[in-house]
Length: 171
Image 1 (cartoon, rainbow, N blue to C red):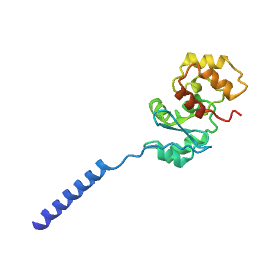
Image 2: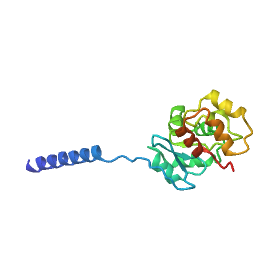
Image 3: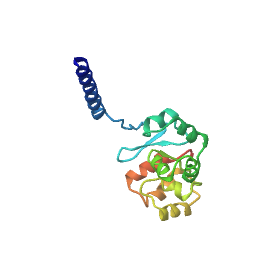
Image 4: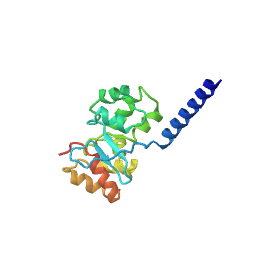
C-alpha cells in the first residue's frame, strides 16, 4: 500500500513539474536581421517576413509555428516565386486557403518593380488594390527610386521603408 501511495505521489509531482515548465516556457519571437543581404524584412511593428526565394529551411522551421520539413520541401520546390498568386496556387495544393493565408504572415514574394502583379504589390502594408493598379499604370520605372517615389503617394514613411525591403533584384 505504501508503494502505491508513493508511486501516485511521484506521478502527481511529475505532472505538476511538467505543467509548471510548459506554462512558463519562453516563446520564440522572430528577430529581424539588419545585415545586408538578409532574407528577412522587418515592418514597423517588429514582424519579420522571409523572402520566399532565398529563405533557408532552417529559417522557415524557426519562424513559422508548427512548420514541418515536408512543407519546407514544398516551399522550396516551386522557386523562384514571381508572384504571390503562384505561391498561393502551389502551396494551396497541400494545405487549405486559411493555412496559406497564415503562411503569408511570415513570408513574401520579392517585388519586381516593372513585372509584379497587383496581388504581389499588395503584400506591401498599406497598399490596396486600386493603389497597386495605379502603381502598375506608371510603368515602366527606370529606377527603384522612381518606383518608390510613386509608392510614396500612397504610403506612410514607415510603410515605404517596408516596401523597400520587399524589392527583389531590381538594379
